[in-house]
Length: 207
Image (cartoon, rainbow, N blue to C red; front, side, top):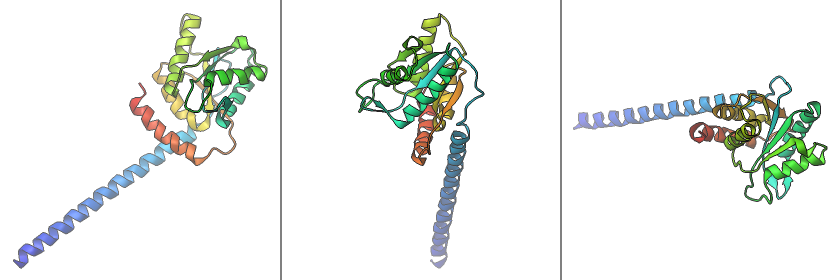
C-alpha cells in the first residue's frame, strides 16, 4: 500500500511539474511574440523616402461630432504639407461615418483641407470605408475609375503607430504605396497596444 501511495504522489508531482513547464513555455512564447510585433509596429513607423506621387491617400480617423480628432488633424497637417510641395498631386480622403460622428470622416477631411487652402478640385472623397483594409480597397477602385487603370504612384498618410499594418493591408490590395508619417506629440502607449490587437485582427480576417 505504501508503494502505491508513493507512486500516486510521484505521479501527481510529475503532472504538476509538466503543467508548470507548459505554462512557462506558453507564457514565454506569448511574451516573445508580443515584443516582436510591438517592435515591428514601433520601428516600422517611419516615412519612406519622399517622392512626388500621382495620388496622396489620407487615411481616416475618429471625429468628435464633425471635428477631426487630434490623430486625424496630425494626418491632415502632414498631407497639407505634402500637397503644397507637390501641387499636381491629387488627394483622396478616405473614411466613412462611425459611432459618435455626425458626418463622414471623408467630408470632415475635405472641409479641413479646403479651409487650409487646398483646391477642392484636387480632392476626391471616399466616404464608405470603415477600416484600414477598406481605405485601400475602396480608394484603389476610385483611382481605377478615374484613370481607367491602376497606378503604383500612391503615398498614404497616417500616424507612426499605424504605418506597419497599413503597409501590410496596402499590399493585400495590390497597392505598393509609400508611407508618409504624420508627426504626433507623444503617442499614448494605449494606441500601440490597440494597434497590436488590430494587427492580429487584420492578419487573420482582412482579406
